[in-house]
Image (cartoon, rainbow, N blue to C red; front, top):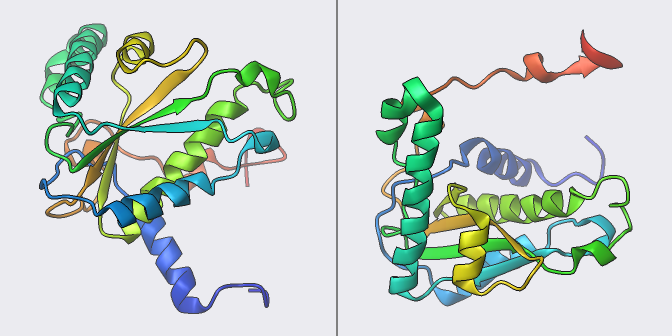
Length: 216
């Protein structure tokens, strides 16, 4: 620990939010106060971004009919995904993959248009714009967990269809449908683990030293 470290209780809270963050699919309705929603989005907006390009754009979906149309796009992709999974299709169709109708708030996180003009940090790694938006979503996720709210990242949709539905300009791209709101409880482990879909792997399987595949 250095003299720049947070006090122990604050450090513990940060690590707890990281450990207890869950990709939530089950929500209990309710609302998110406007000032709290603004605080959460401000946390997202404080994310790092390559070249300070801040490529994130958030669209709050307050129209219930529009929510339904988004859910229909997700359902269409859910069926296509099940078909692509072959022998695991039935198991997949039993999973709950979104809470669009049940959550308090729906946000669509998108990459802005005109990203090609941002070269700083992207000349060889143009996907750093996506990495920057992902950092903003993670900030929102952790802040939401700290505030006692659940959040789920839904990626089952055709980006072009969602972009057309929401009137995104050419070059902009939706990355996530975010379900946000109160929950009855947080999953004690990742939902896909609890449902028997897969098992998380330990850090030791993913940590090398000096060269790829060389374990410490």
